Length: 311
Image (cartoon, rainbow, N blue to C red; front, top):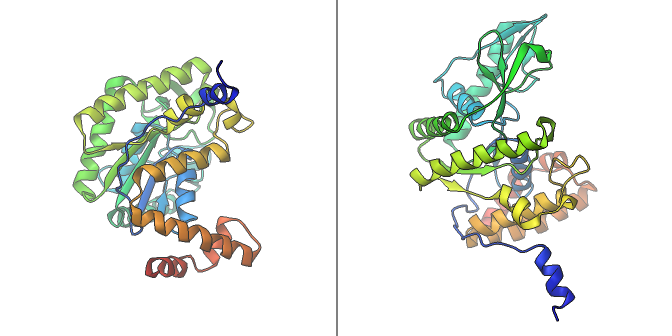
């Protein structure tokens, strides 16, 4: 007779991920992509690992990531679009709009200069792909990263093809090799479910992303892949691990994915560092009677990191 414990274990089984210790306590991480990349970046920052993420806001498609890197690297111009009384930067989040085009352009240019410097000083670049579905601005036929609350009839909803995605991935590799050759690229596919596009559309979109990325990775073995999507869908396999909207992984499952990422990529040096960082973070939060990122920033984040490194 099969034991009840064996039956419970069969409901969720951890799959093997080969260890690849490439991140140490002095690594500097840069995250771009879907909102899931923000969540992972936050968890590193809370443990005193320097990170930067999404200078133009959340980006969902390989094309948006490619254009963002091109603009940061001055390989492509900043394109502004006039609608109503405002100018909009449709390659970035909704917050990038302004009544004066020059003020908006200066804001974006300043972010580009800072992001370029941050990328040059980083050691690892995590790129999270969210969906193959995108919106095309009717007036130009160009894809946009964000619709900026502009009426839906001004856009055409489309899905990138397999070849378009592999082309964008190859261009991302070229941009990084040219401007930031020290960066180790790590791709992942977001486990966030884009159900507003429809269950079927979300499934097809993730499948196209997976297939295109796999073909690209087979040709570029130096680029890494971390299976966030697979951990949610093939290991956890339960809607209990999502927030009430049934689209976003909840805190527990995101913590679990983060733990598996650490187990995969952390050197022994980083594991020791994180162990001490966890103790220090709890002490700091206790002293401040707070448990949020703002309090940690105010509580001499940099000095605490130096203290950890010296220890």
